[in-house]
Length: 201
Image (cartoon, rainbow, N blue to C red; front, side, top):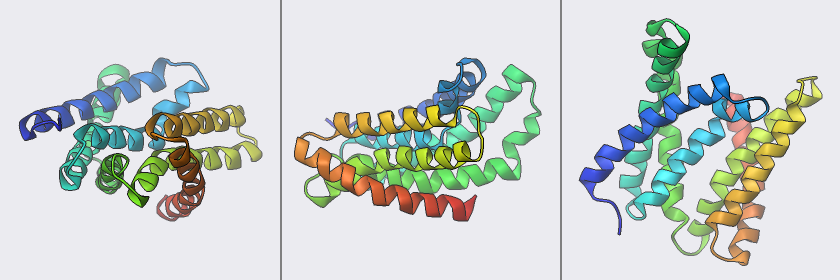
């Protein structure tokens, strides 16, 4: 059964707080190379996807909930940095924080709806399954560029991201046929994502 509006209104912001706080904790205390997952745009996008998947039906509900998740997660991350590391609280409302919130709106809509599509039929299911894998492939491409430029241990991050991409396709898709199609679609989506990320960053 899809969650009620009341439950969704509670879960989305609470999940956002947990995502932001745990993301900072992960970065601070988990050893490299897994620590990089704490600073991963792909992980945040997949969190939005997971919430959309949980919503089950209603693209607008999924998009709004996933957007709320990501927008709340941004100041929660900076608040955790202030409490646990002594960072300046002003960064919570700094332009960079507001910019990440704006990105959260875009990613929340895209990946929240993708979570719904992954349960649908036809091409929507393929795209829905492909999108969370594609963001990890895109991130792997960025790590590969950094590794070629001399970033230490960058190839470990490439491997971690590609393994997670494969696991997502394997776990979310219901059939082998969907897995193959989603894997094929994830590659061009990853390239498109790399172009978009380069343009806005």
